[in-house]
Length: 111
Image (spheres, rainbow, N blue to C red):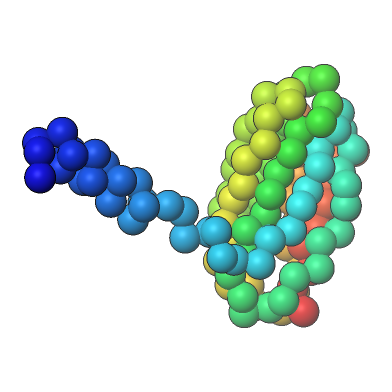
């Protein structure tokens, strides 16, 4: 193989093995829009790791934050991202949009 082809193959391998493990996880969507959360309550399966897709459809920045889940994510207007949540014990886990308190409060319910 040529040096260039080897470099391309090495790059491909590096990218393929670094793809997020979140790709095959169950996922749930959360929309944040200027202090409104949609949905406000997200039901998940207890004991199962999952991905939470977060989308900011508002005009200003938002901050998904949950102290109990130890997760925090700031998004600019129009931005999307995700967080991977470790398996949860049955119960309720609060989260907020810290930029839009006191109104923007939600909950993940693990059942």
